[in-house]
Length: 127
Ligand SMILES: [Zn+2]
Image 1 (cartoon, rainbow, N blue to C red):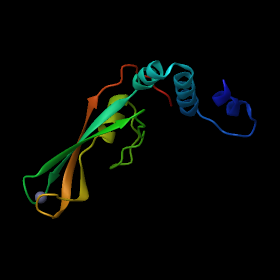
Image 2 (image 1 turned 120 degrees about the vertical axis):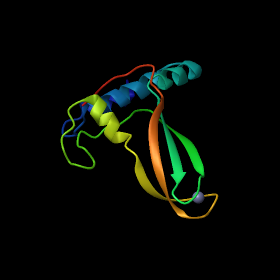
Image 3 (image 1 turned 60 degrees about the vertical axis):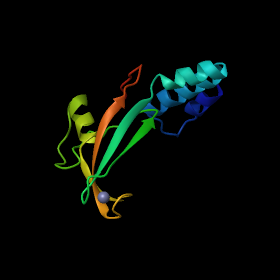
Image 4 (image 1 turned 120 degrees about the horizontal axis):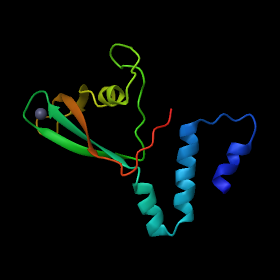
C-alpha cells in the first residue's frame, strides 16, 4: 500500500493515530468511489456549535463535521490530568465565550455551547 511506505522509513516519528488515519484513507482510496466515501464516513463525528449572543436573543447553529475527534488529556481550565474518556469529551465540549460578531445586533461576544450531534458508526480509541 503506497500510503503506508512512509512508515518503513527510519528516523521519522509516527504515532498510532497517524497510522490509523493513513490506513483509513488508504483503504478508502482502494475502494470504488461510492464505497470509499461510505468507508470514510464510518468514523465521522459531528459537533453542533450553538452561539448565543450576549447582547440579544440571537442564536446561530453550525455543524462541525470531523473525521476524528482529538481530545486533550489535560483539563483546559484547571490543568488537571483527565483520566476517563467521558471527562476528556466533557472538557472538549465545555461552553466557552467567543468574540463572534452577532449577525442580528452587530455586537461582539457569544456564549458557545458544543454537543455531539453525529456519532461515528465505528469508534476507535488511539493514544
Ligand atoms: Zn446579538
